[in-house]
Length: 194
Image (cartoon, rainbow, N blue to C red; front, side):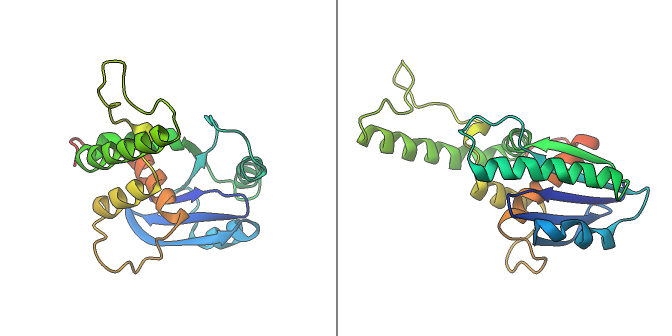
């Protein structure tokens, strides 16, 4: 597919990034009620895939925001197939975080280790166990601790976005870009980590 439209769906708005021939065209946040009309101008029939961040493996309590997001992802899938006849692929946040952690181990491990230490201290201050293993060592860094800030830094590195961001990439659009990057790498893997 030459055009990749990646969507990080939210309960009222979504982050969207458009890639053409593996280059970023633009990114924007859009209210959910106008996402399809906004992306329709970027559709190249037969050469477009829509990548959506899926909410399936969710281990936290379900809030109304989460439920509304899940409902919107379902609506989006239905409308993409029935109104726009577009193929789509769902990629879970866990897949994205794993890809980020594996692809950028130096950047991730350093930041995740610091995050684990910070979280450990906060738990200890509350009188909780913290993040030490039985042998006294700190828990090992993993993709589970990759957060939005780490994703943003990795995407800036991956796409060479140092300095002023002129493509509209902000907030939820970083996650949409990470979904697109995960999808592209899954389809044609790049060897080596950064």
